[in-house]
Image (cartoon, rainbow, N blue to C red; front, side, top):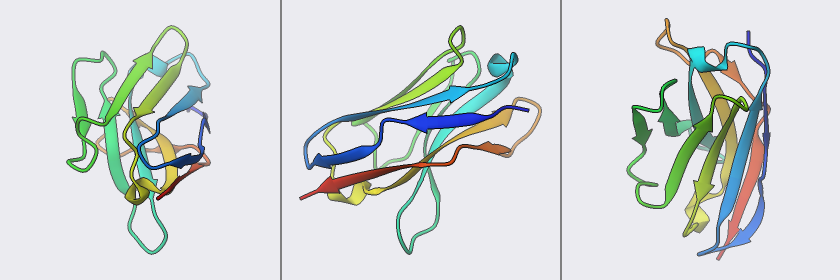
Length: 119
């Protein structure tokens, strides 16, 4: 199992930047693909970005391409999401998630961190 703790959320003006971080427990962090998801009020949760265990493969939602960057440090058991050029529509609770390499679903979730972008 892996436990995930997010940090770095907050309030920022449109056009600004935030960096989210997720610290993972456990010794097998490199056995997981990692992802960032978000859920805005009244909307379904959506995958924002994800990264494979070996950093070879990344995914970005169309809405964040060119603005967000996901990265991971397997030595430090961390995954980060750099968010630039933030828009009010990026306002949501952001969740870190882990997917075992042997599965198709993200099984482990953090508690979430609020990101609010003011116009």
